[in-house]
Image (cartoon, rainbow, N blue to C red; front, side, top):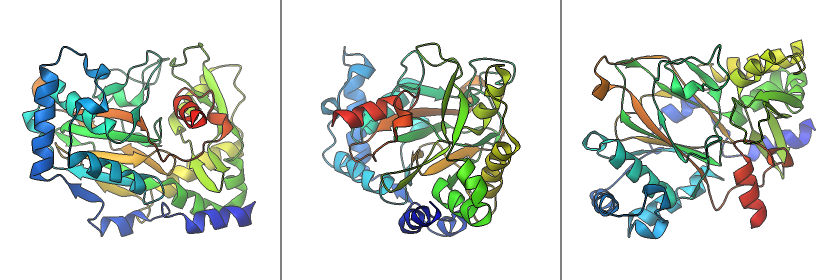
Length: 338
């Protein structure tokens, strides 16, 4: 196992170190004036449309230059470094509806939106609602101002669009899940192997069939690719259910070592998402998180991000364990249909 895994990891362009990435600037890509003009016209057209936003199709957003630019990013997201930051949207000029329209239109030119919860919502507002994950069954980390440990989202890629930033804190954090596993395999191969066995994940009440947990490994070696599914917090909250097996010490150590390695200064990237920035990243090869933040008192100034999940046309083969997953089943099914 170790030999084939090592070969997989060695050749993966998504195996990078954060310190190296922070010395580069080519992962930040700016929109041109022509791109912004096309987007502005599309938002205005959508504003006057009688068709509900989420019924608008790719053809409703005419992007002669912006469309090919966005579609071209997919080769970086799958088969490349696995992330980009798009800069230059006039976010401070947008109200929430305009921001949602912009993100929806941009996303449609990259892939197909994926459901983010049991209600089938396709776009989430990421902001502090005053609720807490601890002591609840369905509150999720993005609804709080908490520090969020390294994890991945659903779909093939996520887009996180900053409309407003907070008063302080809330730094975006990104790490290569491939590089983290590479280090773990070198330091503690026994723990690396543990992560490729089943864990129990809290579904946070988002499964339409009512299932409270899902069972699958954290890392999968599938079709010559290393694919991650890290939900550190939700693996631990699943322990509140009496019928979920208790985490072994090895399982706990493996999860903690992923977080420890990911937080090493040379491994992670830490940066500010400014209003108008969109972080786009592959969920299978990156983990992301954020520092805790303090918000403004004034409601109209408070931190507000918009999140979209997509399946992309060049997405990787997915392990069968994802077939019934609350956040990967849609991507798995779409892959099977092709």
